[in-house]
Image: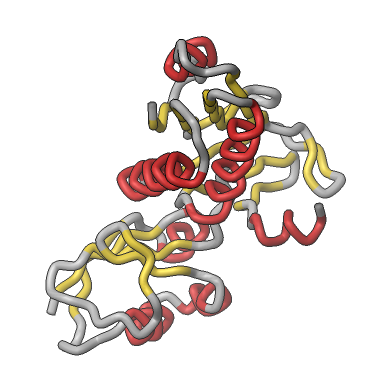
Length: 141
Length: 81
């Protein structure tokens, strides 16, 4: 399941999408929106995507994960539009026969998504708004 | 030749539009397109060294030779997740 949605992400549906009787486990990463950024209070967030290319890149990430690790199923769902604080903006789920592969593939998927998938986050503060530059986040983290 | 340009996020705000048709000399590259866009939208200057260019939904290098009717996207640093 590779999707970009503009409504609240249905986490149960994503979990079900990777269930597999030959899998020994499912690893799920849920990225949620923070109420602060660089010491400032964030009121809300908005995401924008170049949808066809973003879906293409998300499919490539899923394909690459399946090539590199022995996994059964992988799903990536990103939300766009307005997202309230604390809600899920990205959910990635991976099932595999053994847990190590699921953890590694899931980590690869979120790390790569953050680098190459054309999606942008805008943070709204009391005194303004800013497009987040992930390169700066990297320096701070 | 004519190409279609799409702007996103910060680049969209600087250009003041989501997309536009653009006429280019034949044998233009992604790099020469960026130069022309900065001329038209001076605010893009500060982004020029950070943006990536995608042609027909695939990242390309700056020396990529553009073709008629290409869909060219100006991609500021991404921040999904």
